[in-house]
Image 1: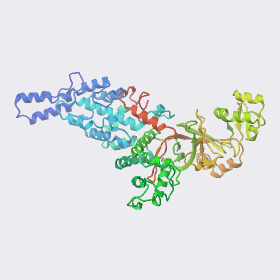
Image 2: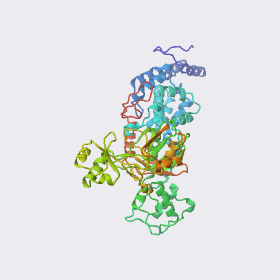
Image 3: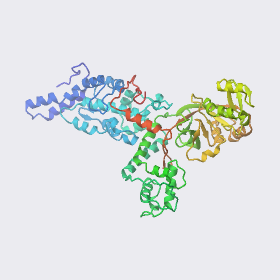
Image 4: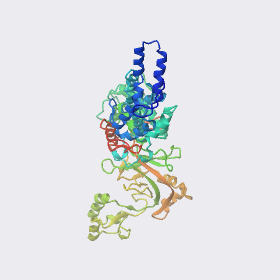
Length: 590
């Protein structure tokens, strides 16, 4: 019996599909001739027909039995994957899944470890599909295509996220991270001896991302262990030394999440709020962006009442946002995280080298946008040009009440080209031109300037930048959304020296001198551009093992969660192209 070289539709017939029935024929010589003929005719059917059926499924762009049956978002990538092999099965040999197929299935079933939903990749359906392959009427083609589509979805989601950041209002791009999915699955996954290692190589390379993955696994387990009992919210804050009805539950919770070490906790519930419990509450408060005063106020108790399952969700959202960052930077970046009110600079290995507090835009009114641009210059002792919104809301009403307001607050009126019109009492004519937008107001340089003594510029359409501030007392607040959108930094001299580290002759001492006694409005161009990322993450896993959670200041968590719920819905209608990850506005990665 010679295996034919072509199939009924003219395509190359996979040799493996014919090898299996030949072996069975050798073993089964003792069977009755009629049964033997039937065995030969039926056994190779699944494998022999697979290429034609795979091509048909690919052309249809849909596959019944998948959670998201419509895979047109990946149709071109799937076609480019199968076409070079004549649409032969890639993951199945005869009716047996390859080692790579089994490894891939395990990764899909354990996608929760990456902050993904296994059901987006048919996680709960693979066991039944594997069992069905052992049946006489096994649909090898459907199994193979389903695994290819799910593998592509998984790789894409792990690489660039499930939701395009631009579709939730973030001015970030993932275009440069996209893979040719057909080529990637064919060359990197099909022959891999360790699929887990390949998958890890496409994830964000940041230590913080890995720590967040570990924190997620830990909080998933904590959520399973927690009894979920709610603490009574006190009408008046409970001070140390006072009784509190929820001490037993609070002790269990703090011990569970690690804020109250087990060896330091009493074996029986305490009668008053004191001692180790106070220390545990302070630690909890620090980890949740609250003032660590040790008082059991409404905000602290409400934070304790947040279900640990919700903390799991916040960690999942954090992992999604990590995936929106570039895999590598052109230079060590500056990263500002809005919810925790901190700025961090990174080194070439993506480790934090500088950390400082910041003040960001007011929630609901003047929120700081999420975006990325390159810093190109700094300005020492800058003027502050009053933005139109502040002009309308603050400056013009103040001038209307007091025509000496400009002079008394070190402002001056200028033309759009910077020519000074007046810095004294404002006449009716000048006021009329200000109201008409024909003139501008700027504040003179100096220690009382709203921008302080230095501003660090990364030109953008949002008119947002980093700057120092005379209002340094605000950095001691636990919640620091007080600005009109720009970002005030706690250590402006140190940050500026770091920014100018590639400019010869700009040590910290010279930076401080330029700020305190240098010439006004001096611009220094950076020798090397510095990427600046303004990001939004409400869950942060720190190197010391602590996991911090912060309130959803601007409501971005809620909007992202809603977008994720739609991302892999059965109504997936995105269109792919050129083998890249291309998706519509209802799907990540467009």
